[in-house]
Image 1 (cartoon, one colour):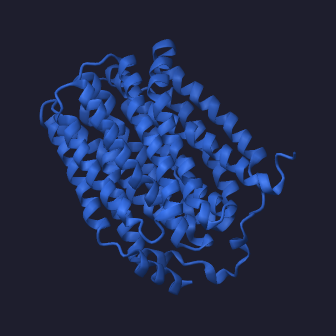
Image 2: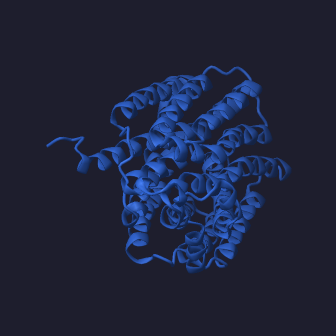
Image 3: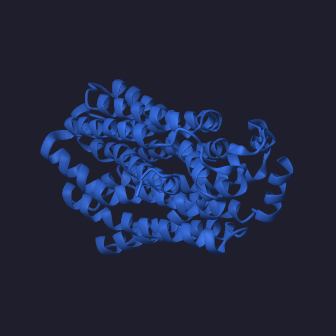
Length: 406
């Protein structure tokens, strides 16, 4: 059987993209653990560490506004390959930095390099899968984030113990170069989705997208839930070590449990969205946000590490329900030639949260003399804002609004 025959091509594409997402998240999360030895080596304050963790998202968020448009215009293949090549380069350079300033600059450029990848991968899904299968296809890609979390924290911690933090980034850069070569030979050169054969009128202009309620409301939902997502992703290693007094390797091992819960949530949510939730996606946005806030509070209020990990896992399960739904909305409600741009705009909100959350938590920890309580309360409020905005969505009205633009 020809692995690259037309009927198999989309599954090959999905598999390669999954591996690429996995490596990308692995690269991104490494700094969350590396910031502990880096902070000691460079004598960084909590506020400075927060700025380092935010610097990636500053560059990443900027590219959300352009990366999707590039993918809509030029196709996903070129954009995806250039993204992986760029982020691999700056991952390697992370291991060569010598100061706070150079580390901030390299992480910012890393964010610029990776910023187009998420919207471009949505375009690749639209190019290769019918609408009825897109939520599941996208959920498979998004699950790589949690899978990276399952093995990533422990894996990165182990690499840093064995080879130090600088060599860890060099190893990850080499993996990225290998993935770039794999993408070059495996991604289809021409679009396979029949939507690309439709006339140019099926594209909604960037200006019209900016004005649409659907884009703005989902962007705000994603901003709020991403405050939680990136706040936890960037500071939980430090919290578990400094407040819960775990050793580095044990922290990495226990961090796999919430990631496993998130992985299961992502796979289940994508299937349910495609099968049962057309026009009712806001149910997942609202209830997912509410339960994220509830379980987050129970997590930091718990006295035992066992209960803290349990509630962190339930929080991650709820958060990932929102995660998948946010990225499914552009795939379901926008024409193929606008999916990348719409995804980029919506994801811009999430990445601005990535800029805000790590720095905000770092500043609050400094202000409250090492306490994480106020910082975690701010994450609870952000999740509740997402729930409130999500409750105002009317998917049927928004579907009519989109179709009128086509």
